[in-house]
Structure formats: structure tokens, C-alpha cells
Image 1 (cartoon, rainbow, N blue to C red):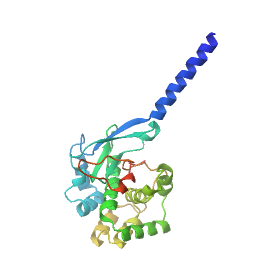
Image 2 (image 1 turned 90 degrees about the vertical axis):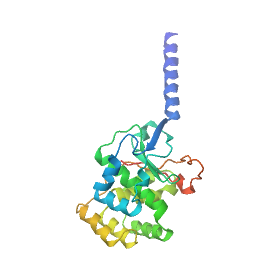
Image 3 (image 1 turned 180 degrees about the horizontal axis):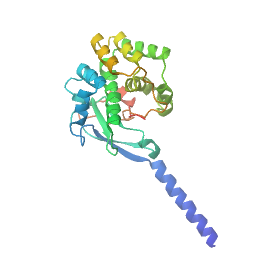
Length: 234
């Protein structure tokens, strides 16, 4: 009888553990400047790539404002550590994971990645997107494999490919931005000057994406593209 009772207790414990895993856990995302003070804005003015892209596409740092509703996304425990932040196309704002501490490199990666989503959703024409996808087909990087494994919805792949390419930009990637007239000759030269001679994409990039079904801001209707999430990296 004691043996049977022990087995039942173990079985009950396993069921509780399974229920906890299946329930997942909430990860709260808040506007990136909440709790980090001016650090995101300071980085946007000191890192050459960030400064160049922000000055061109978000001169007033609107994506880094303190306003905007926070949101939660349910993710499995093993996923949470891979998400630095998110971008919401409906609010046009960059968010960070409330439960993460960021070193300078991680914060820089978050900002580059999520700003790239802002550019993709708001500043790239269909023709520019198509030209970029054709370029990346001919010049693939290792992050693309990770994207197709980490993001189950194929509709998110193109924007994630672009964001990871910007996060781990190769010299040819920056030249392609210039070729498709997304940045000027001067902006291209400035970014290229700041890049190392060879900047390979890490074998395992950290995920940085928007939430799969972000809640709409009050009085707004999120674009369908918002379901193409962008959670942060490595």
C-alpha cells in the first residue's frame, strides 16, 4: 500500500509540473525607456549604426517614448530567456522585457533589431522589400536558419530576416540598403566606417520580435502585419 501511495504521489507531482509547463508564463513588455532612463536615447546618439538609422527614420526618437500601454505574452519558460524585447506596429514603439537586465551590448542589439522592424513596417515599399528578399536569397546569412526554427509563422520570416540582418550587419548588407535607396551614400559610408572588416552573424542569435497577437492601442486597429512578431535576440 505504501508503494502504491508513493507512485500516486509521484504521478500527481508530475501532472502538476506538466500543467505548469503547459500553462506557460507571462512575460511583461514595457516601453523600453521605462526603468532605463535616458540610456536607450543615449545609445541611439552614440552608436554609429543606431545614430544613423534613428536620425534618418526616427529623428524625434518617437519609438523610444515613455508613453504606450504595456502588454503580456504567454511563452513557455524555455522561451522567455531568448526574448529581449518587441516592436508593436500598432503603437510604433519599442518595448523591453520587464524581467531582464541588459548589458550595453544587449540593449544595443534590442534597439537595432526593433528599429529595423519599425523601418520594415513603416518605411519600406513593396518594391524595396522584394529587392531586399531577392538580395538575401543570393546572399544568405546564418540567422535565417534560426528564424525558421524559432518563428513558427512564415509570415514573420521576412521582417525577422531583415531585423537580424541589421542587428548583425555585414558590410554587404549595409551596401544593399544603399542600393535599394533606403539610406543615402553618406549614411552608408558612416555605418561602413564603424563596422569591423568582417562581422559574421553568430551561430545562435537571440530572438527579438513583436508579440504574436499584440493588443491594439486604445482607439486603433493593429495592422495584420502585427501578427508577424519580432522578439529580441540571442
